[in-house]
Length: 255
Ligand code: URA
Image 1 (cartoon, rainbow, N blue to C red):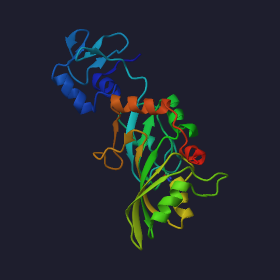
Image 2: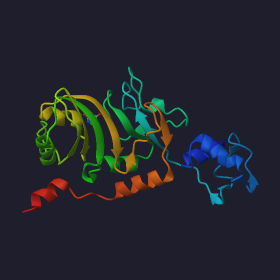
Image 3: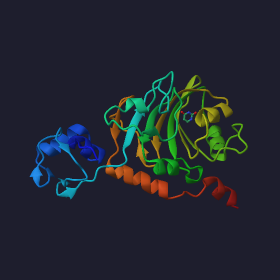
Image 4: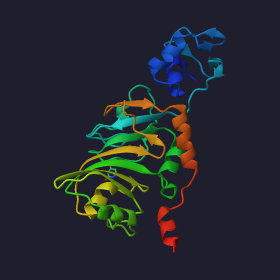
């Protein structure tokens, strides 16, 4: 393996941003083969050298995980002939194997996980897992308690089956414009927009706030990203490993 910068190794391992890990190094908490590390730019061989942070051995992270606040105007793809892609926004680590976990529409903002961990991605996206995704939506026209019930019952959006029960939380309803949060457990194409369309509303603005245990970091402006912390990666792995009971089935089975 080629030597890599120590600050990249520590950041990829989930210990914090590059500037945060440089602080750890400055504080003398990182050692390379028993000697205090010289600085973030020091080149290390993670396979041939012993790298310890506060006494804990560091393995080079085979997988990278980034939380991106997707801005409007970029596409959820790896490459695109016309538009900038979400992967092109991740500049810091020169990994060529990153991809987005699922898709947000070009005009949708918010939380997008970018990784090279194919197994975790396929588990999180698997229809059987029912990972909850919460969106903030602004729609034209009012929203009512009837709409809350319609979303909870499942809507006909032109698919063979109705949508699974979804949680609509109205934040504000007005004659021209309303704001709401919507939590769904599926990921059909344009699902949120089509669900609002099914009740006669058009989505004017859409932002994803969370996916399973992962929430959008308020410190990230649209277009910014950061590596996931170790706790966040572990929480996602737990989510991916634990299938949820289908809420729709539970309802149907109730007397
Ligand atoms: N649903 C949509 O309609 N668009 C998105 O980008 C995500 C969910």
